[in-house]
Amino acid sequence: MAYLSLVVPCLVAFYLAWNLGANDVANSMGTSVGSKAVTFKQALIIAGILEFAGAVLFGQGVSEKLATGVVDPQWFADSPQVLLLAMMAVLVAAGIWLNIATFFGFPVSSSHATVGAIAGIGFIAIGSQAVDWQAIKLISATWIITPIVSGAIAACFYSLIKRQILDHPQSTIQFQEWIPWLSAALMSIFGVIVLPTLSQPIGAWLHHFSVELPNHDISIVIGAFGAIALSFSSWRQLKTKTSVSSIEPLIARFQVVSACFVAFAHGSNDVGNAIAPLAAIAHIHRTGTVPLEDFEVPLWTLILGGTGIVAGLAVLGKRVITTIGEGIIALQPSGGFCAELATATTILIASRFGLPVSTSHALVGGVVGVGLVQGMNSIRFKTVRSIACTWLITIPISAGLGIVTFTLFKLLFAN
Image (cartoon, rainbow, N blue to C red; front, top):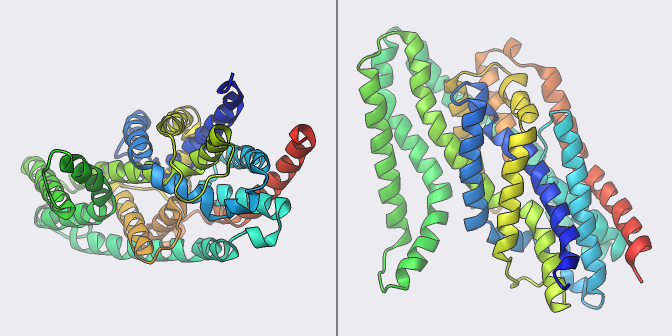
């Protein structure tokens, strides 16, 4: 009977994870599908495996921080059941807004939706003093900063590839010379983002067997091996290709690898948007106290979130993938590769400064940056304006939905 009362929160959390997969994960794979580097079915397989792995293996830290970072749980120390209702309202509000955005094919930030709902509910439940307004201001600033930085980096990358390879009279020879540099850029940027996260648990696991291996050595070895393998594979195929039209399919090889890393990193970071509220509910249900910064996210909640993400992507993800991959500009693998590389670089820079950024914001900015190099006429500004509007209204709408939902829950369930 104890676990029976967790059934409804689990279903609602699955609903939010479902919509997160349909929207946030879908837009992270949009450039790869839009450029025809992978088919939609292949994107489902890539995202399904790597998003789930990233969420289950490395989603705990983000989930813990999100559950206690926007609103201080200590304000609810005397009334943990109120926090339980608040987190239920967060799941419902963020899920509804992501569902609406996905229905219209607009990529929005699940982080902003969850943060907006938590902030709105914290404000109405306790007061303005319970909300970390500095965090809200910082998140709002990323709406402007993230797409601009990502767009600038993508434009620089694409300009270089366009000038040195695509528009060069001897493009095949040029591409052959640039293979090591493209491999190094890809593996170094994604290696810094993903591999250190991967190497930490590997190093901890080896430590149990009295084997000491520096984490950075693991990253360097894996990154170097990946770069060499990717370079050799592309070089062998290039020996049999002579036409300019064959360059794009070869660049698509690099984009498939970049899509894999984006999916893994995204799963490890954004699963917390669906799981953090559920983890807090489970903690309150188990202990009768509010979760503090040192509480642990149960593994079963991460598995639930990873499963919901994959299911949502498979069933509803095509709408947002179409918007990112085809609705802004017509993408080739070279453009998609540059957009994903810019997204990774932007996230890395932001992480160095501790800034909360959105994968969708960075990716849209990267696609627009590629479009600016191709020419202003290649960009469908109507789609860009619609996406920007959904960004601007995400936090206030999710906050409003959270307030309404929390008020209804208090009327229905509070004693």
